[in-house]
Image (cartoon, rainbow, N blue to C red; front, side, top):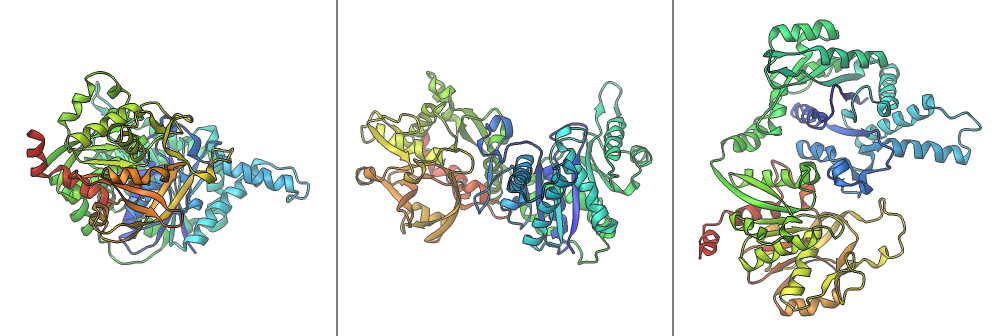
Length: 540
């Protein structure tokens, strides 16, 4: 039987439940256990696919095409677990399923209630992860903050789970805050006490507390938390701020969190081995001596979580190149204004990410033109590739009115257009080209040099594509279409012959990057930005 860990959060939001869950997964994998995850999100949306990035942050896409919470990205980056549609569940999905069954008459005339019908559906979703993953341990993260009305059904289902499976098969871990009051130079435990009290009112007594703190927890503080929260002292785990999130598994291991969990589950397994994680991931980040800056020119840059996987993939590429990479966020709307383009002269590379809508597009196009004309390393992702096509059409081919039909349906030169199968779709949620698709790479191309293989699989999230009617004229002027989706002859990768490093892709490579296995596109992009020859060329 699988074991289950339920992770909740209290006091305030954004305490790092996702990092906590992923790090616990990492230390348990280091003991030889197979882990999987489930993220419960209390909002009524069926998935985050139609939500504004400023509302929700990044939408993480799985191999099977699910649009999910960004925490699933942490789970995949920290562990070997592969996420799918079953690993992220929202209130919207739960209620939609129950209501649909009620309409079909599946409940045989019963009155449908939160308990037991909604909670039973939630428990079934948990069991489904266990059945499909065949994992030893399922880590269930419940979104929101204890005390929020939206998360109550999920907490009630978690409470019932221990009754159903037995004490030794379920652990409750509560992530809380121990704030530091500067004026009195004190750490305060009262918020943690109240948060645990609220959880106990629901019927859940946490077994382990993860205490976020600016200052180290003294022995006295731990004893106080233990006494008032009814938790063993050794199960009060300090989670102080660190230089990199990839240190968190080591911090947990040093406080024997894995031993506490295994003891509760009565599991005996091999000794822990985090030496590779420490040696290949953490130490290179903390000891890198080189430093460069690249520009991330996007339209959602004021919220860092909007491009979470991209920032992490850049860090991974830095690890591979023994370099600290500062990804400077630049609002693409600002580049529309006169002289603001000068800021790009300070950068060693330019990355243009994905997005939707016309706002900020012209600024992205200006940044791409700057990279092309100044021989600066450029990496375009999804919409970034489409903007690169528009820029080339306008400034190299002379099609000044070139555009995407997303931005101008009546454009004279629709170099980017809607996929044919998308033209009749009415609903927005879950209807894009989503998930993993094959891409055939042309030999003797930059893409082939980067990937070192002729067939790759990457994750997609888009509706618009390069218009194949213009392919020949683009090729005549020096654009190389080095990656093609063979089944429908769709352009996946473009690059330029007369440029040291200019490549753009229709997919999202950031979703497959890991700290110990950086994605080759990001790795080689940073390697190109470090090139001494490139630096000398830019000076001239």
